[in-house]
Image 1 (cartoon, rainbow, N blue to C red):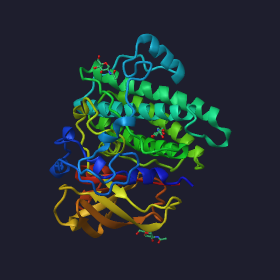
Image 2: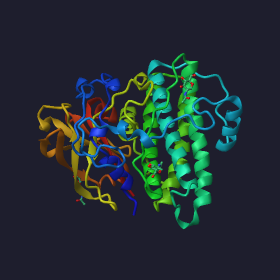
Image 3: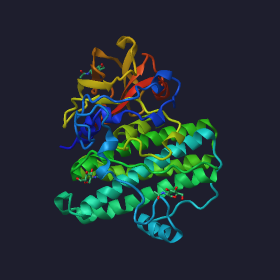
Length: 400
Ligand SMILES: *[C@@H]1O[C@H](CO)[C@@H](O)[C@H](O)[C@H]1NC(C)=O
Ligand SMILES: *[C@@H]1O[C@H](CO)[C@@H](O)[C@H](O)[C@H]1NC(C)=O
Ligand SMILES: *[C@@H]1O[C@H](CO)[C@@H](O)[C@H](O)[C@H]1NC(C)=O
């Protein structure tokens, strides 16, 4: 029943609230057009979800919703943890970080570990707030599972803290500044929605860490870093089996989980959860933040069938060329990018609306996470090619 609530939440949050901030302008991949954003948001397409922009002022942003935003430090001092606080944290996490010397890594690997620290800090914020919402009685856990769920989430929360500390410690050992936390707003207000959201962003994390491993291998970084990331992929996969099962899905979604790119995950977190302008050193992370893309009509019980989805792209001076030169690209499992034309594209105000087919049935069986983006071009041989040409996205679709 909760099949795509998180998708709807991620997809329907206010377009205007999601625009990249000034501080991220100019960090591009290879496509210069991905880095040229309109400076100020408009107020079209606002839907609420706690993002604060309810269609009034044209400059309202997520940051204005900040009165209830989550902010650090935690009571134990995190992200600045004393030796004795770390001991308690390790007990809660049921384990410790590695104790070998930190590897010296490439520049691109530093980008990866900055991204990982950024991602883990966001996850610590989410799980801290989720645990608080349960212990305070604000959320009701169904079927008398409260104690079981809290036991799991307490460990997850501590484990995410150690992931974040680990990434930042590696950066420090490499002479790089640690990534500092932002303020966050989460577009959920119910236990089931929160778990579904956790499942979706964990899917994105698991896909993105594949990209991190690939980059480490390509750059010939120390092999131990690839081993380390593998241990985290498994850890996040264990978590996701639990979240999926809690919401009535089978624990393992697919034979080969959907891959992603650092750029997609970085964009999604900034677009959906970060209070804009609240990150002390976001600009250290040399990854682009794409313009937002929403998928509008995924059924709550969507099945992997051939169908057509409606999309809205936040096109505030991002792209002014011919829509026929754009493609809607799906990334699902480990298959090649699935490239489809934009049907009936229409620019209204700052919104580029269109439809695109979704070939969910044979031969792809597009269950689990599907990442949808709009990219310039029609011929993409790999997910790397897609990311390099992406203008809008990701929209996240979860099926079964
Ligand atoms: C953590 O410590 C650093 C360095 O002293 C400081 O700049 C930062 O503001 C602290 N972070 C938090 C959230 O307290
Ligand atoms: C916790 O509850 C508050 C208040 O309803 C809500 O705004 C927030 O998004 C919730 N956070 C999580 C992680 O579920
Ligand atoms: C679904 O679409 C794919 C790709 O366009 C096509 O090959 C397949 O025959 C379609 N399947 C059904 C059941 O319509």
